[in-house]
Image 1 (tube, rainbow, N blue to C red):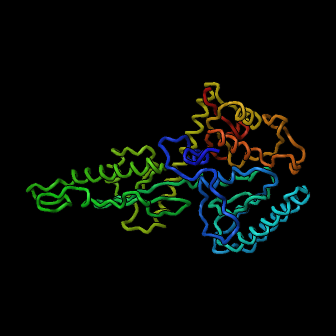
Image 2 (cartoon, one colour; image 1 turned 180 degrees about the horizontal axis):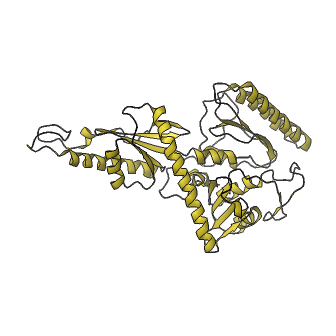
Amino acid sequence: MTSPVTSPVTSAVTGPPDEPAAPAAGPSTPVRPAGRARRPRVPSPAQVSALQAVRGRPCVSLLCSTTPGQRMAPADAARLRALAAQAVRRVAAEGRDDADAVLDRLGQLVPEAVAGPVDAAVAVFASARIGQVVHLPVPVADRAVVDRSFATRDLVRALHRTPRHVVLVLSADEARLFDGVGGTLQPAVRSGFPLRARDVLPAPRDGRADGRGDRGGRRPADAATAAFLRAVDRVLVAYLRLHPAPLVLVGPERLVAALRLTTRATRVAGAVTGARPGAPLPELARLVRPVLDAYLHSRQAEALALLERRTGQHRAVSGLEDCWFAARRERPEMLAVEDTLARAARLGPDGDVLLPVDDPSSPDVLEDAVDELIELVLERGGWVALVEEGALAGRGGVALSLRTR
């Protein structure tokens, strides 16, 4: 599988890359074994890639919505244990050689998930080789899946709904940069920020660097602001070149507008101009959230527009079966799929064809062929756009655009 540097999982979140990515852990990144629960955080692209790389039945996935808190609510814990019991019965019924190892690992992971702090949902993954508890910032459809690979679509959806982003907070004399992940902000490390105007502007003749004063040679305020913003943009673009992400600008309307006119950053998601000076990071994160939501909706519109263009060029297919065949035989570009779509199917003898099934719980059935299709497109270098329910109603809920050969 491709490394998250040009990761298909990263592409699932951001769309086709328009800036080179920073070095990151590749698919050999180890999956954390069962252990003490950590503070909930959105899964990383490397973490999702590592889980997607696991193959071999039985792979058990438990997905359960939860009430955020320092400990799982009793009702949520009961639902998770019920899902685990379903999985135990199914794994035991299959009678595979490594069933005991899988069930032992599942028995360790479920108590870990129950005891630790939780977010909007929890995912428990267990196989003979690895096990992991993942907390998600988005709710899920409760289910227990036993398949040849882990059910990771909700992880991809979490990345898509809470993408990594960068927030630049501007004032007249300082610029600060924050990395946003999973609804939280933290200072961007090794970024060159905070950047202060007095540190980058030449001192006027009277020794002051604030750009204010009499006509005796001091820098005009607007020229000083422009020079400061140019310096900010140079450092900002250098950071984004190594850490590509959508950018949100925060600050007075005048400064934000001036920077938007001149910045070389290519992915400005939007701006917040009503933040109070010195607002704490949780407050900033809440203000940024609507900007990111609007940005994600625009990405959906871009994906649907691309699909229409490729349809006119005879380079798009619709429906689960046709998308699967094309993803196997052609060069997938972009898979658009409604994020609630799920269907069971059976692979044909050569793996190129999906066949209908009567019993979704049969051991040779793909419980969620849509999830398998997403992973196939990502593995083959395409990107994924998760769209709202009904957006692809005329296409069977899923469509695939193709690159030229």
